Image (cartoon, rainbow, N blue to C red; front, side):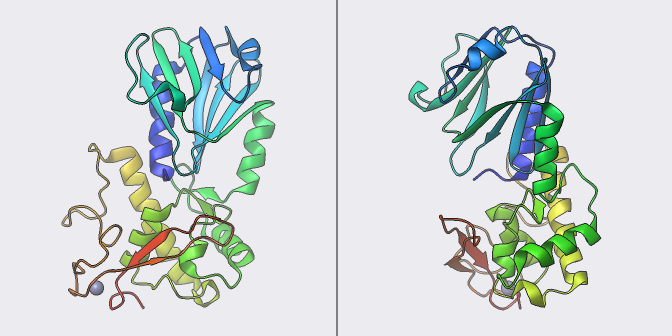
Length: 266
Ligand SMILES: [Zn+2]
């Protein structure tokens, strides 16, 4: 599943190539009436909130996409072969010399009313860790409200608390904070939550805005991840084998693997 930094980068890229251009061709598989609405309209902004991507069109029209587990957006020049089969293309938006294609994106919603739509998502979701200032009081109150007695490893995936953290960041953040994903959310002190969120914010922001490479960076000395994807390999700090277990968010049907060091994280 794309994390907040991936969606932020996609929004920046789409914005760079689509902004102020008129839609010359459009096909949204689940919304056949979209071409009538969007054809000829100028794209006025592309933004994101957490893992939600928004394309704004003139006439107060907004398209929301959520990539869930498998979705992705690509940019092409017209006529250039796509890297994925057209069977998987659920949205094609051509604007001048650029074609934006969404592959396997399961959520596409077209709405009238840009501010109302964005306002709804801003109120439903916690602060965006890349775009917003971290308001610890607000994040703490949402953490207490929504996490309940869930495990902290589950709670970090709950986008109502803060938005942008996916599976990789929950694993890496808890490792760096030296906190076990199996601690109950209710046992996490405000100072610990502040440290967790500051680590996540810092790494997400760096990888979204500053990292020039294609691979995420979590530490200047350590290549790759500390724990994510390293089940059975030795911990960089203590040498203990990294553990891989399944842990989803309470609201999710698809459980996802959690990676952690059973010695460093308590
Ligand atoms: Zn360790």
